[in-house]
Structure formats: structure tokens, C-alpha cells
Length: 316
Image (cartoon, rainbow, N blue to C red):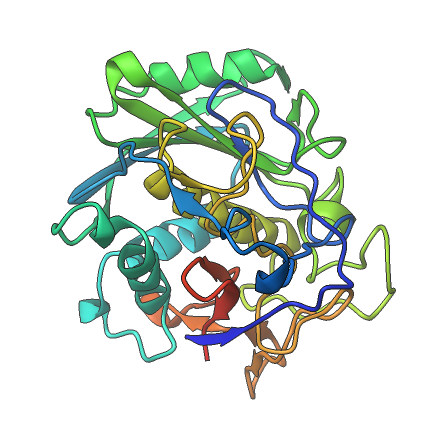
């Protein structure tokens, strides 16, 4: 992983809380991160810190609820990404998705537990449009509770491009939440293809705000799903390291910045507003990516905040 400090001139990221113990997916082109100079904060109060709470450990079962109409190719892109998190035994060449996840483990999870942590894909449920194509945030939590995910696991509620979710686009692209009594965490991510790709699928779509540089070519050919992968990766990092609101975070507990949301819009070295950073380019398709995955997939994954160095760490 490559590390670099963001310039002080970049604006502070504002995060809006949508659920108790929730954290939002980054909207990288609307607001960016300001990381202050260490000399300005001698007590290191600006750093993303551990707050003595739980993190997810060991083998983490992940159950999926597909809400709405997802095609088989769309599902396979997401499933291959989740399988890529498991380990390097899937034949991924570096830089890899597994390498990205191992950085989450190294910087956060392993400091609380000596268990190696990895994602294990569990059951999948197709819910079609069970409650219609408009959902509130409280309904997302209810839907997640029906998955039957074991304690210590994560339920993914993934909504299709024609499903409208309360405050989707206006406040967030994704969020994670929890039920502490049940030991259950959940993540919601929406497909922004037809609703707000300029906010939730950048840099694979023209940004809604800021510098209007050309969008990048998506490695798997689906702008909406590529945006979901970016936001899902960010939420998985936040859920594992801050599942119940008292793990690793920076700032206000009710509106925290976490492992990846503390580095919005950063995907490669040299990133700045309107520029995702130095990325790899597929010689055949021209697609931009920074991680190799299962089944020969290529993905774009967000930078991870390294609290010890106060930098955003990216895959080489």
C-alpha cells in the first residue's frame, strides 16, 4: 500500500447520520477531506482512534438480500468481489482485493484481536420488490433482520437501480447499522445508475459537482455496479472496524469518520478533487482499476486511513 498526506487546503468532510450506529458511504465529489497538520493538534485529537469497543473478528459470514431486479452479470460482479476478500488463494495477482482487506485487518482489526479476519459468503435471498420500490431507512433495518445472519456476521441489503431509498442521493450512497442485542450488523448500498451516478458512482460517471474531468472506464462494464462496489468496500471496512459505534472512528460518535470514509475520493497516489489518483489501466479495455480479484476481475477500491501516519493508504 502506498501512503500520502492530503493537502491542508482540502475541505473537511461532513457526514450526516441516518441511523443509530450508522456510518455513511462517501460522496467523494461533493465534499473532500481536510487532514490538519499534526503540529496544530499536539494531543493527536484529530486522529482516527480506537474507543475500546468491539470489532468483527475471525470468519465473518456475509448474507445478501437482493432487493429489486439484479441481472445475473450484475450479481456475479458483486459476488466475485466478496469472494476476492477471502484470501490470496484465489489466484489474485497483486495488487489484489485480498491485499486491500489485509490492510484493514493489519491497521485495525488485528490490534484488538489476534485472529485473522476474513469474509465468508453465506446465504443469498431474492426479495424482488417485496415492499414496493420505495423504502425508508427503518425498513432497510427490518429487511436486514429477516436474513437470519449469525451473530458476528453482516447482512448486505442491496437495492436495484429503480428502488428509491429514503435520503438516497440527497444525503448518502450507503450506510451501515447494527442491532447490538442480536450481535448483528447490516449494510445498505444502492445502485445509483439512474438516480445519482454523478454523486455515488464517481469516478466512473461525470461528477455532479467540482472539476468536470472525463469519467473513467469501468473495469466490469457497469457504472452503477462499480459505484456499489466502491461504497460496499467502504462500508465493509467501517462495519468491521466500528460495528457497534464504539470501535475505530474519528470525530463525533453520532457522525463518525471511519477507515475509508476518512479518505473520500482517494483511489490512488496523487489524488486531489476531480482526480482519483494514479491508477492501473487495462491494456485491452482501457478500464481503470487498482485491485485484481477473483475470476480475473478488476476493481477500484477506496483508500484506507492509516491513523498511525495520518495518511490515506492506497494500493500500489
